Image (cartoon, rainbow, N blue to C red; front, side):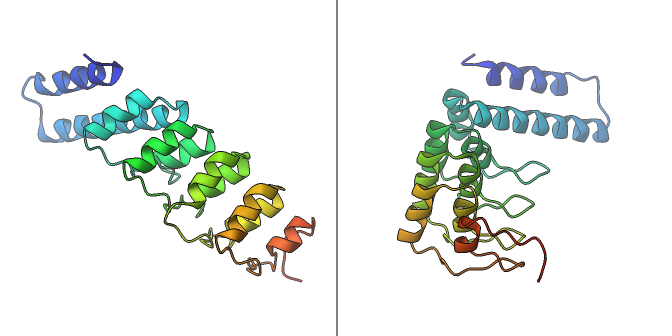
Length: 186
């Protein structure tokens, strides 16, 4: 076996295959169990930046845009955890850089939040709208301004980010950069 994934898959498939005449619902349950376990392996590999494990999923044609209950994809997890090599590998394999989690945040927003400058620069170059908003109406430029990520802020501006965009409370990249944060309508 090439790695732990192959071993785990074999063990799980053997359990299902050799069950003594399982009821249909038991097979369905086991199939869901296997799917969940595989997805956990994928997400853990992205968090750790395990490029070999990620390659196994890529070679197997696994859905790289699958998400967990919070809407996190392998790309979002790799970006947030600073795994630059994994981010590049996932993007090269077709992972969706524009995917939004359940709060509307993207891999780019996660990289900005964590201060992952090289990853953020790479994600700015992805074919996504640099003005993509999360559920609170915030843009990547607002994140960059709020968290004082000057280099990322410049990169966003150079790539067409709307510097006049405002969220639901009227916060703009400029006001956030100046430390003026509105948390309610005034």
